[in-house]
Image (cartoon, rainbow, N blue to C red):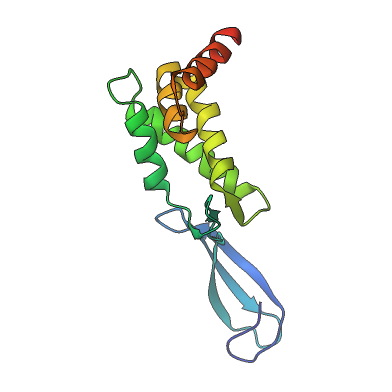
Length: 151
């Protein structure tokens, strides 16, 4: 870390502790050249996730939009808000941990369906019917048949 007083590029950490909000690490440093002390903060780098839609347009990942879509699928089902929040957080974490900064809406939809299938099968079918744009009752029945054969 470059010293703000003399510009020397080496310093040693004297004290390190989290900030009150727990989002950053506060470090007290001492310059090896001039022995002056200064404070630095370490934060997690937040790299935005870009969603590539079916029409090839791009937009920033929106966790609220994801949550609302899942909430509609889970309407009047025994799925708690906490369960939905956890699923959204799991999906967002999985996307953040991947090396890809651009992810397709198809990939996100598949992640949602996988999670909903574990959580509530009716919510899964509701989400799939909108996501996969079932054209008729036969397509819908095919999906239900797949669901029943996997049990």
